[in-house]
Length: 69
Image (cartoon, rainbow, N blue to C red; front, top):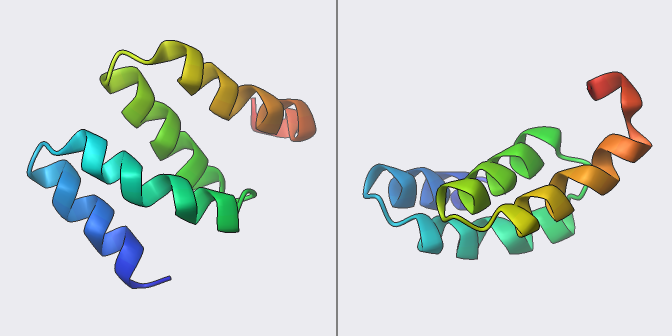
């Protein structure tokens, strides 16, 4: 739990967005209710021009948590 956020941060700072996504996705599977991580994954997808995956990442969560809109 402590190492993954650091890995993601280092990857983003180094403009290695695919690597950041590679580390973030398993963490999100372990903690699917982590809104901050879910948003970060969606943002990485958008930055990588993968908008369909970004929407698929956010949409189910927003449907379950409408107060977060």
